[in-house]
Image (cartoon, rainbow, N blue to C red):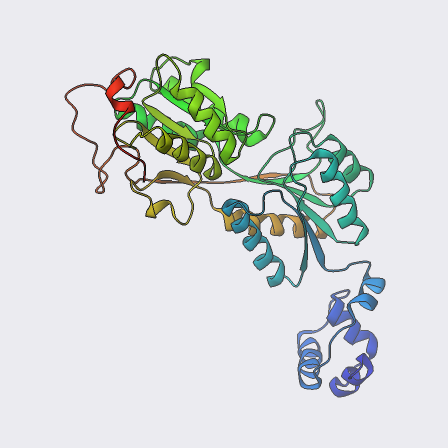
Length: 364
């Protein structure tokens, strides 16, 4: 197996120069760098990662702690993180905190003990132990998707990357209101998450823009999971005055909501209109096709890596929050036609479904 000394002899440089090129520890003239890289390629030299980490105090690895990796949204984020990390020469160590604060702190500690250079974490509803650990050990970290408030009135301590949540949710509400709906409900996510709070704020903002009153009974928590959304939707349908339109706050809860509607023989959009936050690969295959807010999932993951690498390059730079824009994907579950036209109405939507609407149709 060729050694670093073999590469140095082939390139006509010192072993130290080869080390600087491979470890990026000192500027090297372009032609010298290329000579070293050519020798590496010709000889088939493979750097000793362990030895290199001892020299540079870097392992060129990133720890990723994300719950619900089976969720298509987080799966796409993972793909974005992995592709960007590989592009920059980093490997990835992955752990699932299971949205449990105690387990979250443990898996982050395990990643830290593996000497990752930095971490990307989607924090739980109670990240206090996590934040304390990362701060105490000065671990370069980017919070992903879910934001963590700065302590007290102090400055923001960690970089954060997420999608816009408030305005896109408001857009779903105003779109449904523009179709004549007056009782628009929200199946919200797990209480305590910043995404949940921001989407509720967007829901209220949309109601205000449409000059509709806010009704506590029309906001239910599906806890960011399918089964929870199914229960929450059932509670909405049991109201004396049920909603005529629903907004679901993530893709997993959309599935639970559709299941609850199907079990009651309700048809979307004839009985209830539906819009969802989070687009996913098969949303266009449903009948009706789902009107949704699409998050730039892969770009969120890729951006988190770039922000982390910026932090590694400049540890003292002020922490920043990067928000990425979402896209409104107009389909037919809201009640519009395939061409995007609004349905013809002789008047506004009813205040709530009539009894006959609860006995006809199916959700396919």
